[in-house]
Image: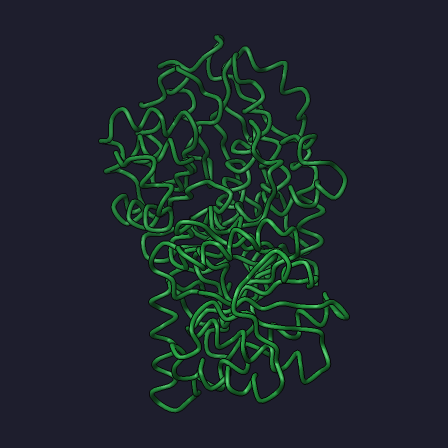
Length: 499
């Protein structure tokens, strides 16, 4: 996992290292410039480049870059969007070095100047911006975006808030962003994430690599580390028993998708507790045991009692996908009081939101998987506030409810109340009905195999997204179905976890 910092955390990290002599700001600026230069050389060799610079440290990175480009014979020039007299410190030092090296500078950004260059470099603000972009800088952002030229952003696209990902007035839309030392939240949270393009992280030290962070990004190696290992002599009883309480006459597919995902994720014994009307549909999943909890089409008091009777034999349970309007409050209470590891999703969350008393019974082995609208109903927050700060929303609610919260989104935020893990695997093909049902089945199966709630939620989220990416190698986003993702789970595990 990689550390993810706020702008303030990054500032303090740098200050501490400069203060105790472990690094100098001028040296870090040089390392940063070399990182950007390496990307430009690898991807845009023999292309002309224009760096648009501000007066702060981001501009200083741009000046150092221009000097390196000139020294290696690249066709380049710079634009300083301010009076050079306003430069100070390391930015001024690198500006003077660039001039000494023969770097050309323009004072105004025009369409005519933009037309002379193939690649644009954004070195205006980086992570230090805290107010709306305006004046000549806003004009530069608009002209650069409208040019159609590839833009490489230094550290963060100018106009993106490094901590929240918000757009401060207007923002550069980069093809690539070269981040320094570690990810910032603005690289990973929307709408800022959409402005970053492909993000490459250039380490300036080895001090954040592997360090404990209260926010971290899940990576492919984490899946290998988190998934349970299977001895060659293991049998089905060793690999967990999972109970999936799901489905109704209207939402048969949700139960099938959730169950299919649990099977693919390796649960040793998978049992689907379903209304009787779904029994025939489960002939498509002969590997699962389908137990009819009542003879009807929906969940009722009898179904809850019969499903609750199955709990003592299980290692984990999932409740909610596709259960519809039938009341399952009695079953939810029985599950929470049993202390069995549990995933609560979809209609389970909707029913809990109507009687928040059950949230007082959640515990550290429970995973809640709300999307933002479900989270708003659960915690009483405004939807806009949740979307503005999903990281702290997930953390604070997990802490308040003493459980694991997986707040769904293109950037999924998973928290145990102390730490937040971010997942960005996946693609827009998951923005379809059924994806959440697959996720619930994956997490439930991993819980049954002995993973903690936090690890099961983390691995399940990454595995869902990575399997969708695997499927996308064969299918287009608009053609991708939730069942395609299930079919790719095994291939994804092999690709990421067999070493």
